[in-house]
Image (tube, rainbow, N blue to C red; front, side, top):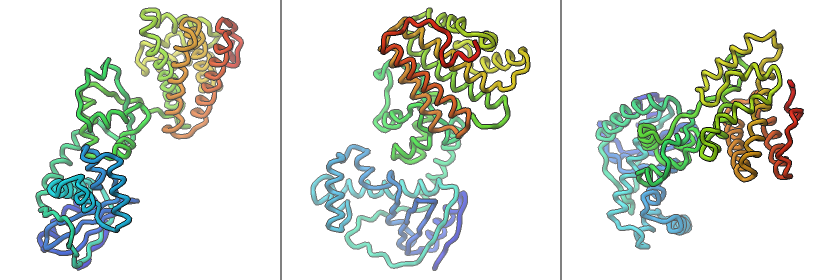
Length: 409
């Protein structure tokens, strides 16, 4: 019997159930974009599975659980490839794992592949009857119905996780609520995922780079979000759409930049921190003083957006408000950074400039291309290099307001 076609949703589960009920012996191939998995049936029982997915491979599972070191795995992989034998056979013969351990992880590999397949929303499948050569292979015997029931339970649980994580394009960052790693009690898998959450990787990138299956990563995300360890990073829209939308995106970028400065100076300056930001505004020329009058770093981003938008409406007609806002923020950031350098010196300033560069790197890499984005990134990098050069030469006392970004004095 030959079966082939496209599938969506739970169709694949129905196909597995059909092959089980008809006691088929053959191979089911399932593909999605660049991924492919193969499931082997023997009289309606799943006995083996292979996959192109990293997290579903036997060696990866053994290394992730600490059964093998990277060096041991690489050595055995090279030997298995050269001798054209199964990796599991090499691992047992060389004494790295027992036969019972191989059977256990072989079953885990097959289950991992099948659970992942049942999460696929769509793809292509092809089944062909075939005689299986199972000689010298470690096979398992899995009931497809049991797997389908467990997969259904996981899908239901995943739907709960996705209410908190609405998209795999969302980016999370550490919340800063935990002061020391000693306060965080996580297992090795959780630490691995947490180490990849850095404010620049999306949820999908964390899944891919961790090597774990989607359900496991989402479950860890849900856990660390619930415990307050991480928080969602604002999604930034810098497209060429409606004026209000792009102004909000511009303010979000600069708000992140200024918040990174605030975070780095708060411990050193304490209550003086907010005063530094307020005093920096006094160095701005008109009309920037009016625009930033009610912009405060201790307010939520949305409140600051409203404050800037309201200020623009009270002013005479401005032909290019986006250009004015970008240039104004560059000027404001420049004044803030000069004051930080004058008060704290080169070393703390260098750390702050490096963190701002990380923020800009995130914007450049993960936000859709636009003239606004390019201008913000380029002008901020010019400003950073100017500040860095100025303080490296020991000219931190320059009080001039007539720099490159003093466009509206």
